[in-house]
Length: 174
Image (cartoon, rainbow, N blue to C red; front, side):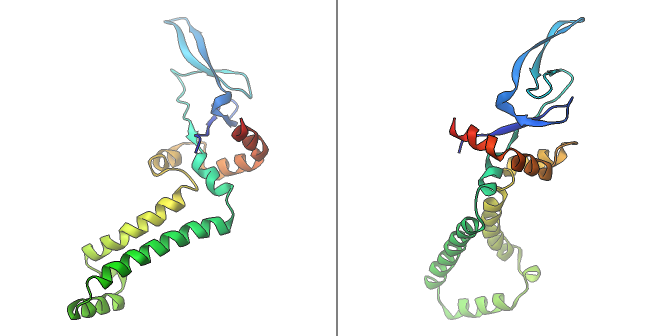
């Protein structure tokens, strides 16, 4: 999937595609010049010494935005089938009287009362589901800084994508 990123201008507070920003320099009385980016919407040059402009990768967000509920359910159903197949293979290869008793107890045990090792086994598959779901919002590595940004939040990005859907599809084709 091609990486699609957006920026928020600290001056006009509007969001635009990163590819539309122009790089250059702005003059400085003290040191000569600084690297800068020009906002494609307000045309102001943003001095990168004084402003930290973060690119937000929306490629994964667009995956779910452009997917139907049925497509997402199919991806999750495939994962659930893989989990079931993995467990069934494990179980069939290890059927003993002791394991039947052990698994019977586990079936009756609430998750919070499982041993740490048993919980870790469940977490392995929960992490796989999480990985599928989180692709619809951002990548795991990006999630922490995304929510720490003062003026951009995920709902604002979703609204921006909805407002610019036609523009995105044109970008996707080029």
